[in-house]
View 1: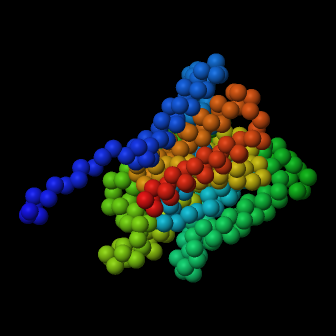
View 2: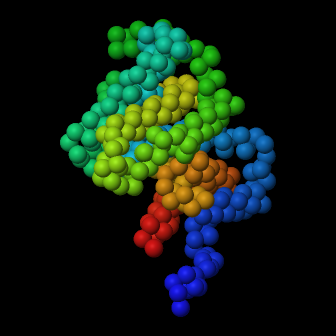
View 3: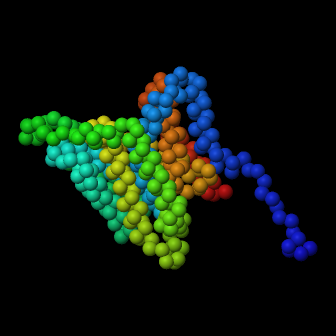
Length: 330
């Protein structure tokens, strides 16, 4: 029998493959159905807006983390960067009396230095990304706490001199933390990063570096340059998340961004399996954030104690990692 006549085995239906591609979306639909049945107000328009508003900051921070994952990195300092941005932008208004635009620009510029530090340490000293950013996570959190002297920064706060702070948080700034603007910012960030990673050569280069950095380097791709860009974007979006958080709560609490790290990591890794992407992607990260937001909101409406939330989120993250790595190894 000629080689051309050898019958080819047609690919059959694989339940595991199908669940890998659509399992996350099915879980989202299942949660909507379950919570919608058990909680009377779950599907109300106001609650849907509340869910979207609650996941906005997590999604923005997680989108930056997604970019670092695309190049094979892992930026654990995004929560600390958000805390620093939160403290900086509020202090620009309260302590220094700056306007909205200038306060935000200065905050973003300072926080981009975080990305530069991470990129320099990872690229120059070739330290594993997760270990290096774990160290810088504590450093940047310490910087934020030192800057604020461990106190909450807010209007009319008492300064070390004993006087009251005279600066005022602009009313236009507060609108960034309210619907629909906080949701619009989230959608724009997700859309821009999705287009960048999926439809530009630079995004494809990042994926190539994440897949095999040595092969990418041999192909002529400037690996160090793209890793630098990835960490700058990660720091940028983390700082945007911190600024939006400041606009939402109108003050700067100690370690305010630290609580978003776990949710951001969970959202990014859950996103690997959406539509079988098998890689970090902005749309998948958004779906992951929606899944976490639905869980949190639904459990609260069912009066589940707040201290049990981490059990659920940790379980969801463990399941997402199990599915992702099972798929990679089979």
